Length: 284
Length: 141
Image (tube, rainbow over all chains, first blue to last red; front, side):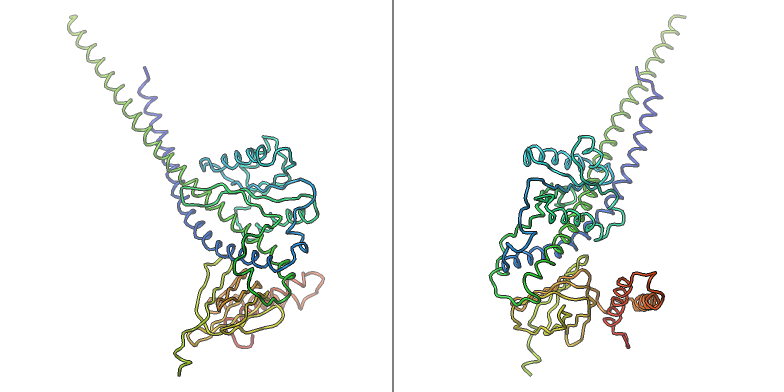
């Protein structure tokens, strides 16, 4: 027989948890709005950069440029973008599981060096004994474009010096406030997509196409990295908002159940007391 | 007469890294190319050029509009002009006082002993401040 006081305490405790999750949900919603706006501002730049890079690569001899070729060896660099903070549902777990799946299925038997962004991913992947080349923790506080370049530039250098032959990035793409899509993107070697009209038109280049490409490929990587971080930040807040919303709803369910139980127990106790009094009176 | 009634025939899009793209119709654009300033008029041949830090000038509805841009690249194709730059600041948005004080600070640093400062950085800061002042239309900048 559960005691009344215990149930009362549990109801109070769940209620205070609910208050916290509700507050976190609101904070996440506000942050999400800001992150979403920032993301929508960075997407066009990144899109145009890629388009321009695709077009330009069609105008040069690809053998000329180191960023366009797969390097020697089969070492792979994988950049995994997780978050620094938890309480965001399956956000970090999903990206870690996908990382582990990739290591087994996509790159079996290859040496994969992971660069991890975010404390949560770092904690789990280290426990799983993955090869972690470097970890970037805390870049989401005071994020600027320099944070993005400081993550990607060492990987570009490793690629150019031949330490790694390919560079991939695994991140959450922001679809909507409640859905994120885990995306694997190849960053290097740069593989141009169809360039359309940009590739087939005759252009005047100032300076030469080769010189522009050299600068543009790096700028494009920075732009993509910048976008990827904004995608990740918006996704994180979206995931947190959804997680906190369902936690708040769960708490409400639990409170309803506990209240029901509390009343039933209370009623039982009253009935029993009544029975005792009545039978006591009868015995007289 | 016919000239005046013609619609502005070039679509200009300025796309900065952290800003929503700014789109406008215009008849002429002057850009700070890395190899010198140049002007784009309707019917310009397809062009891809790198840009230097500087002031970009365009005419919208007969009035000059200036932008301080921080390097980047321009693509001209079929009267569509796309300017991709890290930062683009409209002259109207420039905080003149801030730019002025940044200029003074940079000048002050450059006049002091050079061993203690990063000359390249101070010079870049000075240039940025001057470009922003120029975009804002300040006299003597």
